[in-house]
Each structure stands twice: as C-alpha cells, then as structure tokens.
Amino acid sequence: MNGVIIQYFHWYHNGNLWNEFAENVDFLKELGFTAAWLPPAVKCSSGREGRGYDVYDLYDLGEFDQKGGIPTRYGTKQEYLDAVEKAHKAGISVYGDIVLNHRIGGDEEEEITVHQVDAEDRKKIIGDPFKATAVTKFTFPGRGDQYSSFVWNYECFSGIDIIKKEDQELKGIFKIHNSYGPEWTESVSHQFGNYDYLMGADVEYRNPFVVEEMKKWIKWYLETTKVDGMRLDALKHISSDFLKDWIRYIKTELAPDCYVLGEFWKDEAEKITYFSDKMDDLISCFDAPLHYNFFEASKEGRNYDLTQILKGSFLEKKPVFSVSFVENHDTQKLQSLESAVKTWFKPIAYAVILLSQDAYPCVFYPDLFGTEYTDIKDNEEIKISMPKIEILPKLLKARQQFAYGEQHYYFDHPNCIAWRREGDGKSSGCIVVISNGGEGYKGIELGQDHAGLVYVDFLDHIKEEIVINTDGVGVFKVNSCSVSVWIRKDQYNFSY
Ligand code: CA
Image (tube, rainbow, N blue to C red; front, side, top):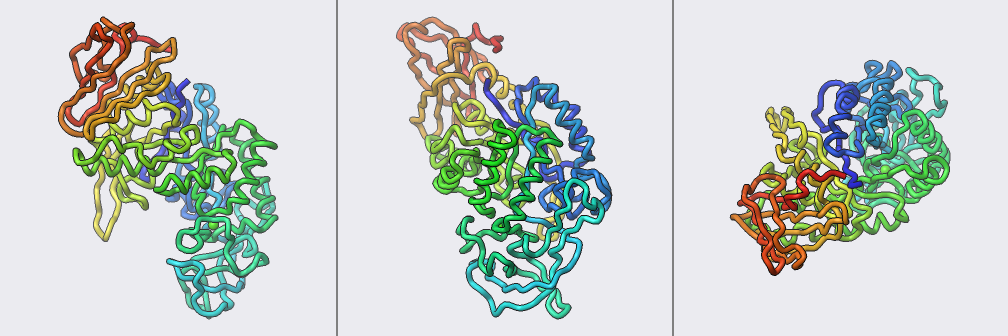
C-alpha cells in the first residue's frame, strides 16, 4: 500500500496531545494514514512548556515529579502508552521522536576546565583554557535510580553554553576538557568549522559509557512504548560513528523492522546523500531541499519554472530513502527555520508529494486540521493563522486509490506540468496536471487501447469530462494556479 505519515503536532499545539491523537486514530486511518510521527515524549528542562527538544530526563515519559510536575506538555506516560496502543489497534504505526544531541537543566554544578570558541568557527579558540563551574551533573533526584542509575557528568558532555567564572555567569560556546581531549569530535557536519555543538550540555559520544547507556535506554524505550520507528533529531551535530553503531545495534539486536528517519537539515541534496551513504542506508532522511523548492515556488508565483520543482531534491537522488514534506514544526511561521510555504501553493505541493512514485510523504498537522497561534517576534505580538488545506483529504484519497504504477513526466512548460501514473493492473492510475500561472492543458498520449475512455477530475476543480480521441490522446486541463487529478470515470469509486 501507499504509506503516508502524519506529523501529529506543531510547535504551538496546546492541550493533551496524546489523548487527542488517541481519539483521532480511526479518522486518520480512514484518510489513509499508515504512520504517525509524535513529538518527543521525554521530560524537558522547561517542564510543561517544553516541546520535547530541551531534554532533561530520557527515562521520564511523564511519570516522575520533576521539572514542575509529572506530565509533559503532551500528557502522562500512561496516556502516551495508551495512544500508541490505540494507534496499533487502528492499524497505524507510531514513530517516536528521539533527541540524542544534548541535555538541558542539569541538577548540580561541577568544577571543569573549558576554553571558549568562536561561534562562527568552532575550531577557533578564544583565549586560554580556564577553570569554571557549570551545571553538568544530572542525577535526576525525582526519579532516583529507577530504570537506570546512570549519572551524567562533565565526562559525558563535549561543550556547554553557560558557565560561571569567579562567580560571574558567562554565555557562549565553551569546549569542555574531558577524558576524550580538548577537541571536538571530527565525525560531524563541518558547518561553522565543526558543528558538534548545538545547544545546552552537548553529549560526548566518544565516551563508551554514554554509548552503553544510550543502548540500554533505547532498549528500554522500545520495549516500554512499543513504537514502530523513530525520527532522529539534529543528526548534523552527532557523531556519525556513534549513530551507525547505535542504529545497527537497534536493527540487529532489538528491532530489525524499526523504521529510522533522520533529520539531517541541509538544503543541498548532495550533503544529505553523502550522510545517507555513510549510514549504509540504515535510515531515511527528510527532503529539506524539496521543501525549499516549494517555499521558493510559492513566493515567486508564475515566475517560478515548474519544470524545476524536483530539481536538487533528495527525492531525485535516493527516492526510496527520502521522506518528502511540505512544512514542519521548524519551518512554520515564527519558528527557527521559518520558510512557510504559502497557502495557495500547498495543494500543488501536496499533489507532488502524495501522488509521486517512491518517496514516503509526511503531512503536517495544521495543514489537515488548521490552527491559529500567537508568538512574540522583535518585541511584537504576532498572530498567525494556518487554514486547513481543504483539498488535502481528497488528495490523500487519490493517493490511496490511483497513485500506482510507473511514473511518466511531462515537465515541458514553465507554468504547467503534468505526470502520469500508469496504474498497476488493479488501479488504472492517474494524470496530475498543475499550473502556477493561467489555465493550462497537456495533450498526453495514452495509447489507442484508451480511445473512447472518459476521464474526470477527481478533485472536481474542472467539471467537464474528457474523452480520449481515436489516436489515444487526451487533453487534460487545469485551472489557473491549481491542480487537477484526472482518473478514469469508471474507476471513480475504485478502492483497494
Ligand atoms: Ca553534538
């Protein structure tokens, strides 16, 4: 079947997400979703404010009274486990969100030696090493030694952003001198000289005790939650040597079918491909370059050359390992990687990711449900409205019914392109036509055996029917700045 993921959250979601998701699993199944990516379930430094990325305690899934209470932003451990179980009953897989790079909100100070580095070039040392204190000890007093008695100290971290020197607090990027040397690990992104450091107390994966503990933890997490896969956060910043070893351990010792999806955020497909190859194809990666194509196309309108829409995407390089998406919790308005695709273009972008061959598409929660939120930017309160994309359920249905078989491209006009899915013997496929300018059409030769067949627009944007002529050619239309999905009329109610 044509798998499709829902990213079941966004940055500004409020309320108990685990319960809401559990209540919606049947609805999601009906729409054709086969998997759901849920946000990190762990206890954050900022307690119920935390979105899951400022990780404090990986073993606290909303079970212990730490950081301001028992539940996380999304609910309690039991609610999380119940939600996963309900999803499984509905036939939906669940992907947990795993943050490996850093820890925030330590419990005790330690005396350490550090040197400061230039944020723009982390290999450039500023001044001499010096003694300082920093909150690098994590003892988890609220949990004690339940599940694990591992205590994290400065030997487990490579760098930190806040230190105290002679009682004065200093902020910056400080390289911690631990048993693994005063240098950053080499096996990370070379952006900014060395991109090991991202935030908080950044984890030292050259420490074998840390590696051991993280293997122990993922075993516990998979056994406890029974999730079917994982989305791994911030992989640019984590030792690829560790990642490969850790993922191979999961795939060989714990769960051979565990689906692993990496966030390796780069706008160049070559770099994602390099990373993907290095991981021996153990993981899939998000197609950030394709998202940026959508973003540009949505801004440029008819000046964007649609024949280039897939150009430079990870989908072009390694389709089977690519997860395509239109928007996510980092690219939505007011967030760190803000690059929100404009609303008018979203039906077109979703048609591309849902109806193309090979890639595994991921739908963003607000695009299905709609949302409104406010945040502060430059001291100003800004209100954002994300309307739901009304045509999305229909496009999901088109994916389930018609997006099968070989794909043929008709990328021959800057403002109007089409592709055809041949069908697979059961389903007769579809022809997708999109326009970012005026009304358009594509003459497509289907073969003389198609002569006389009647086609209709499954999305109902164009009401008239199209009849294939005696030469086997059909002229498939599209409205201005729109998408049409042409299917055989006699297959309208076809279902797998
Ligand atoms: Ca790191």
